[in-house]
Length: 245
Image 1: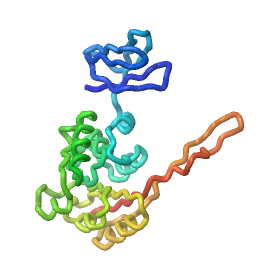
Image 2: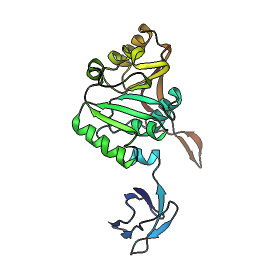
Image 3: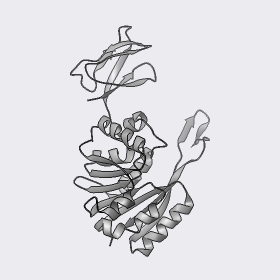
């Protein structure tokens, strides 16, 4: 299983396989076959590396990217607002890099996710293997609406998550796709599509429909005092939640 090694005296980290010989400008690192998280190993030049088990935030940074992935705080909002947990079945569309699908699988759910771009879908499958969730995440290449029309999967699902341009059209089918009490979560970077999603959700009878802007400010502490960082505002998009029944 892939692990993370962190250079103790530098801001450097690498993904390695146990039993691998890994070369960097800090020296050659021989990773023992049975290495455990917390172990410290050294390169032939004496640079110390600490071994860590991969966790969700690490996957966000080390997944191969096919675009802008959903960031950890947005993933947390989706999981928190929908209650995704063990034994849930999730239908996801707009896989992209696969950060959300992998995170929900690591929470114990089974995910069926659709990605239109074949190359993106293949990268997502590789990322699922890195996250050790290939058994819980099925990445299909195709359009989720076409799959709905063709009846190529068994509904209902516990949760429906969408990050696609045609999200309003999928939300229109949400009552048939979700169990009673199941949740839909739609992420969008644009207000116009978000408004269409919220309107459609209400029209088809979903309850508790609400939209949040996802925004976060990092705090800055120095000798002059404490205040929010002067870096750009941490806006990423809009999250709409609704419930079936």
